[in-house]
Amino acid sequence: MKNFRKIHFKRMRNNFLACLVLAIICFSAISLFNEINLYIASFLILFSLFLFPFFALAFVYYLFMFTFADDKDEKIHEAYIPPHRR
Image (cartoon, rainbow, N blue to C red; front, side, top):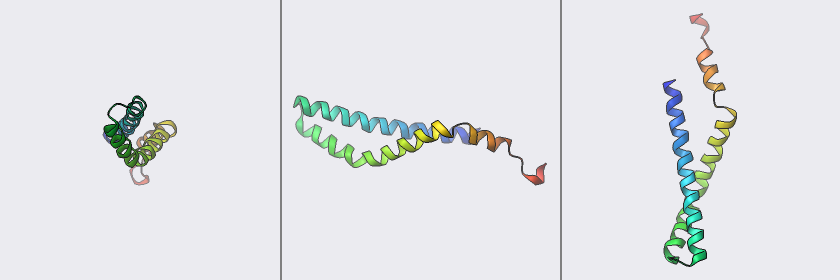
């Protein structure tokens, strides 16, 4: 169970980082459309586009893990007893 908490924390951290990058992109787009702080918005867009592929891949991977392999792997791991301990 302790190992599961570590994995869960890592998943949540990566999901948070991916959402943060998406928020930066949205804020930058709004700033560009309003023509407020054009240099800051363009810097944020370039910065977030540089980081976006890494966080997008992590977000999709962990979303997939949450959806299809959340509790099953942990239950299988807890239920498995090695042959020499039976």
